[in-house]
Length: 257
Image (cartoon, rainbow, N blue to C red; front, side, top):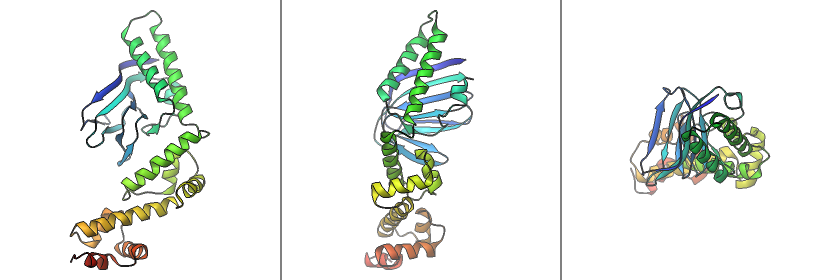
């Protein structure tokens, strides 16, 4: 059974748009962005490109919206279901991923909106069939055999590390984003960027720290915390290794106290 509550296709919202639900929903939500957007997943903010899909199950925490200064457009379906291909399928819950055939997927959602509006004789059967096609396309987007998917997901991971270096990154969680093993991720990342995942995290944390040392008067320990370090001495050692001087020496060289 699939019971559509609301469905909209290619809806545009103004800059500053946010959609937030705090585990009070008893319905499912499938959304596909038509513009870049941010998503909060497990307390972490990720910026994703256009044509990102997320499937939210009932009673889940939902937060996404426009990135700074840009409008937000999306297709979305709010519905009830007990269908195994949705409830027990391979589509991960509350996990953003990139659509491989976004035009086709958007058209399927458009057809669902039309079918849901009109009370046709075979409405329920048609909606069921369209959902099955839709979720087949979503599964294709997640296929580990898709080189395009891996490349896009790798690029997105690289961008998220750069934009959120202070997050508690670890290789197993990163690998989950690409639906591959940690060892495979390490090989792909090293080949693509010439640096390991965690080396990239450290590099970007230290770049962020250097910026904060140059532009603020915050204590060293506070900057270390803001850049993802729980140990100030460890932070100072890595900073000196990267830039050839301690955080205090760098700040003094820039005319700071």
